[in-house]
Length: 539
Ligand SMILES: O=C([O-])CC(=O)C(=O)O
Ligand SMILES: [Mg+2]
Image 1 (cartoon, rainbow, N blue to C red):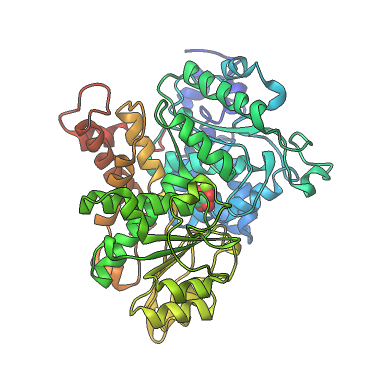
Image 2 (cartoon, protein in one colour):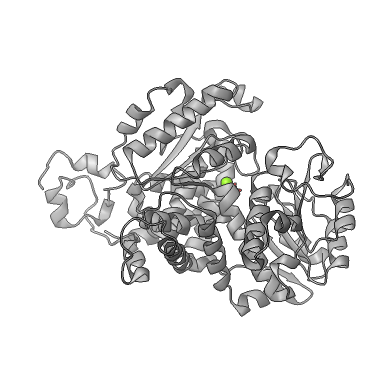
C-alpha cells in the first residue's frame, strides 16, 4: 500500500515501527524515506546497539526507563532485546526494579502505556474500551494498585506491574504484543504521601469502596468481555479483601485468575515438589508454617491442600491441616474470633503463639514460607531453630521486591550451615558458602502465569479451574534437573523460560482438552500447534 503521508505516523506507532530496519523498498512504499539515516540495519544490529546503550546506564532504574522508552518506540526491537537477554533484563523490566519504577511513576512520567479507568468514568467504560485500537486482545492484566508487590498502596503508580507482567506474557510465552492490554482501575489511593504529592497523577482522593467499587469492577469485567469475548483477565496486586472477593465472584463465570493467589501458589507448590526430591517423603508429610495470611499464604496453602487431597484421596479439610498461618496478631488458631473467611479454613487446634519463633517451637514445621513483606523476619534464630528441627529445612522468602524479602539467600545458607532448601520471590545472586556454590532461584509466579495464560487462550477456555494450576506446577517440577537440585536450585534456569513456558502451556492445554474445558478441536500435534502460535520478535 502506498501512503506517502503516513510515514511519520508509522514511525510513531511502536507496533509498526521498524526504525532503521525499514528496507529501501518499504521506505518508498510507506513514506518513511527522509525520516531515517541512510543505512538499512537488521534487527540484530539494532538489538546490539540497544543492549550496549542500556548497559551504559549504571543503575537498574535507569535501565528500566531506557527499556520503557524502547518499548514505546519499537516493540519488536524491545522484545528482541528482552527475549535474547532474559536473565539480564527480567530483573529490570520486572521484579525487583519494576517496584521502584512504580514508586517513581508520577515523577518520571513521559508517556503512558495501557488504559487508566477512574471511578469518575463509571458508566462510560464501554466507550473507553471502544477507543482501544486493538481488536483482538487476548490477555488483560488489571490492578487497582492497592497492594503493589510488598510496597503497599501505589494507586495509579502501580501501572508498572500490568505493563511488566504483560511484557513477560510476550517474552516468555509468545502472546503477541498487540494482543495484550495493561489496565489500572483508579479508585483513589490511601497512600498519604501520594495524596499530598503535587505530582501524583491519579485521583487525589481516598479509595472508594463498597457498592461503588463493586459496580465499577463489574462494569469493567462485563465491558471487557463484550469488547473481546475470549479475553483472559488476570487480577494483579489488589488488596487482600478485594482480591479474594473478586476471585470468588468471577472465577466460575469468566476466564480469569488471580496471579497473587493462584499463580504464586503454583510456583510455590513446584518448590515443594523439588525440595521433596532432596528430603524424601511426600507432600502429605509436610508441615508448613506461613509468615503472613494474605493472598499468597492462603493461595499456596490451598493449592498444597488440593494437591495432597488429589494425591492421597483425602478430604480437603483434612489436607489443610498441614498448613498453619501466622498473621499480625499471632498464630491463626481455632479459638481466635477475629478471622476473615480465607484465614478461618486454616485455623486449627493449637496453642497461641505470639512470636513466629514460638510458633516454630510449638509446631515443628518442615517448611517456613515468608509472604508478609517483613524484611529479615527469617533471622538467625528462626532459621537456626528450623535447622535444629530439620536436616534440610525448607525456607521460602517470597515477598517482593528484594527489600521486603524475609531473608536473603546468603542468610538462609549461613544460618542453616548450608542446609536450607531456599527459594525467593526476588532474584538473588549465587552464594558461595563453605566451599560450596549455591544457585538460589526465584519462586516467582513468572514461571507460570505467561504459560497458563497462553494455554487458556489457546484452548479458548471459559474458566481456569484449580486443576490447570496443579498441571502447571507438576510440569514445572518435572523440568527441574538433578544438576539444578545439586546446586540448591528448586527451579530450572530462567534463561530457558521460553521452552519452559512452552512445555507448561502444552501440559495445561492437554489438561483442558482432557477435562472438556476447551472450546474447539484439539490439534493433532498439540506441542507443534502451541509452538506455532507463539510470537517471536522479527520483522
Ligand atoms: O510481581 C512479582 O514479582 C510477584 C508478584 O505477583 C507479587 O509479588 O505481587
Ligand atoms: Mg503480584
